[in-house]
Length: 170
Image 1 (cartoon, helix red, strand yellow):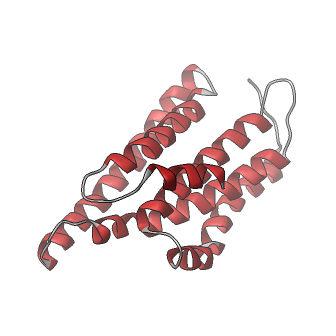
Image 2 (tube, rainbow, N blue to C red; image 1 turned 90 degrees about the vertical axis):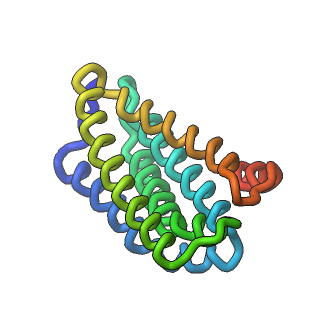
């Protein structure tokens, strides 16, 4: 698969993702008034999934459509911002009793694991890309789906199936 946007459009796509993350902080604040952290993380994962799907749709071998990856970058950036802003809220909303020290330790470990996962996913994506250019995107879709379906199963947090249905309907 050879997708050619040109340097300027490629740079625009990369900048779009960063700008979507930066500019969606107000949206995250407004969402926190209406959604629990778990619901927000689910919504963020769904937006990230939608973003990757649009990038894939816009970069098929037969036809390249710049608008779809552009919208995909916006959706993915907003989804990332929602997830990263609400991840620690999951721990706060849990029914687990923690001291400040335990909470800080878990928060630090969580951030370390997220950094390691980001590094490993980048390396894994580069490895997969060497075999087939579409594989890193497929792997991202799979991990988003896993996150969407595993999140409601975590003990100590209450999310009903109706919440998941509502988020998918949105």
